Length: 113
Length: 113
DNA sequence: TTCTTTTATCGTATCTTTACGATAAGATAG
DNA sequence: CTATCTTATCGTAAAGATACGATAAAAGAA
Image (cartoon, rainbow over all chains, first blue to last red; front, side):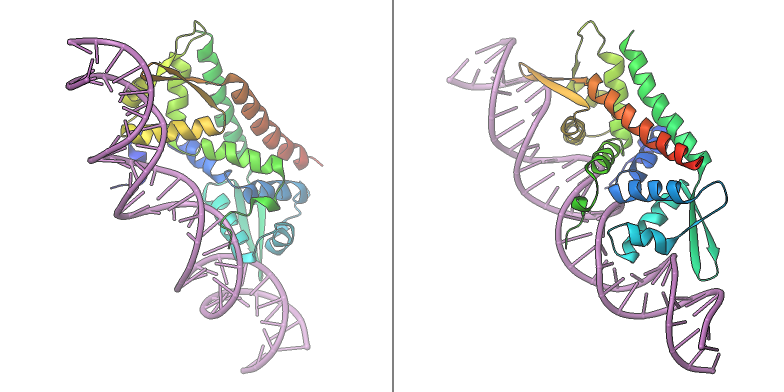
C-alpha cells in the first residue's frame, strides 16, 4: 500500500506540494532568511557553521534541513576547503513565488465566475 | 526528545510553516482548486461526496485531508442534513497569499542590500 | 421503526520527518 | 604525519503523515 500516491496527481500539483513541503518547517524558513541576509550580491557566502549558530538545533539537524532545501533547489551549496558555503538560488525562489502566486491567484479568479 | 521544536522559533515562522504544511500534499492542492471551481459567489456549496469523486483517494483519506485544510482555516465546513458542505475561506487564503508573498519578497529585498 | 445515505472517526499498517549523538571524510594547521 | 576543524552521513528513536477498511453517528427515506 503506497503511502503517497503522487502518480495520481498532475506534475504541477506535485511540484507545488514539494515546494510547500520544503517551507513546511520553521527552521527552514529561518535558514532561508538567514541566507538572504548574509549572502549579499558582493559574493559573500554563508558558512554552514554560521547557520548552525543561529538556528536553535543541533548541527546534524541543521545539515538535514539544508539538504532538504538543496534538494528542491531553493539553495545552492559549494565546498570551500573544510567548509560548506550556502546561498539562496534566486531563480528557484522566483519560480516558487510565481507558482504560489499563480495557484492562489487562479483560485481567486475562479471565485468570480 | 521533542520531534518538532516549534517553541524555539518565531510565531510568524511557525504559522507560515503550518500554512506551507497544509499545501504540502497534491491532494490538498487539488481539493482547494476543486472547491474554488465549484463554489461560486452564488452560494453554491461543494458536498464532500463530490470531492471524493474527483480526488483519486478513498473517502476516509479525503476526509482526513479536508480536516487538515479546515484546521489551518483554509476551508470552512457546514453541515447540511446528512451532507457536509465545504467552501474556501477566502480571507485565510488572502492572508496566506500575503504571508508567502511577503516572506519571499523580503528575502529578495535583502538581496539588494 | 427500519433501511439507506452520507461523512467523520477509529484502528491499523507503513512510510516519512524530525532530532541528536556519534562517526566518517576531507581539508588545513602544527 | 598527527592533530584539529568542519560538515555530511549513519544509526536510532519517537512522532507525524498517509492510506484504507470498517464502523459509528446523524439525517432522511420507505
